Image 1 (cartoon, helix red, strand yellow):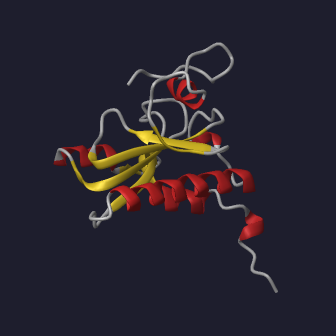
Image 2 (cartoon, one colour; image 1 turned 90 degrees about the vertical axis):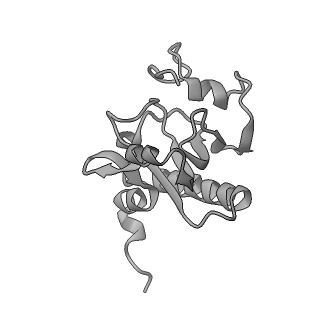
Length: 155
């Protein structure tokens, strides 16, 4: 897949922004006002989907502990889970997460949704965590961007 450059809408090219605006022939598995999902063109697992925000957000480094960002990532994860449970119910293991810069392939936020096994098996290397680099699990990332206001319990 080609490296995306810059942000969508500003004249620069972003393949995922093109998909979000229906400027490609990509078959969508899910579409709503916030996100869309489609198959990865170079799958690394039995099922490998990407869930992207409609809005151009370059990477996980552009998300912060704000309610809107937490809600978006949570929604992305829910969509991914729903699709994989529908399309690969026989899989016993699923993985959901993001590649962190500089190891992301496209500069438009995208959640990898994988129904294992990896195909071929060596592809698991692409989805390993290397501290602040590499792959970060979606659940772990949600904890990282959880707004402080949602941490406090109601009395």
